[in-house]
Length: 299
Image (cartoon, rainbow, N blue to C red; front, top):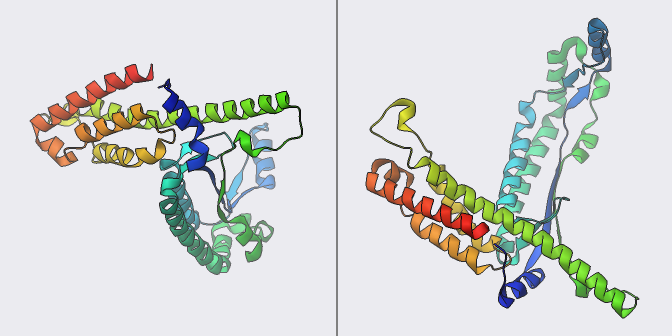
């Protein structure tokens, strides 16, 4: 999947003008504490230093809503962005910036509501914990509400993709040129790796259809019948819909592959594939052919 034409190279270098880096981060109160006394007692009993006794300070369900909100926000964020580096930064196409920020603001509003609700209930949650933990309860394990509030965070940092032309340095011309080349090479390598992730997403969805559909036979029973969920088709629909925004380098080969997947693998609903032998066989064959083509494409 390495571009070779001048236009493809130009598209890669032009990414910075139509994309940005986004970094989604969260903070939470873990509501867990190492119980040093219990740890020492257990280790003494067994003659070892291998045990660590950790207390769950409050009923875990009290924080489940916040955790779920953060997990869903992260899943959405990852679905519409491309990996950039190991610091958590990802590439967002400016064409979906408004949709992205609107969606994240919705998650953040719900996050803030859930945190506010938790803080309001905090005194009664601590009182309940005292009853549940009994002799293991220690009031010093519980910060006050204001300290707890600072532990919860929902933030998104946005910054431009580094460009060699953005750096003004007082160096010799040769040194400036060398630094510019290093910056472009670094960004190029990161974007190339990110596009491999996009290709992998599409490949995974196609491979799932190529595997599941031929093994499904409604005439059989039990394990021999095979099975697949509605998500088999929905995952393909989702990746095809978002791929134009994920294709940050405007790779025409990837666009063409996505168009072909959408045309051939999303024609029928999951129910139609279960009920119709002809539709299922047609889609299974198309999935395998596309999978073979993608294997050659990635080589």
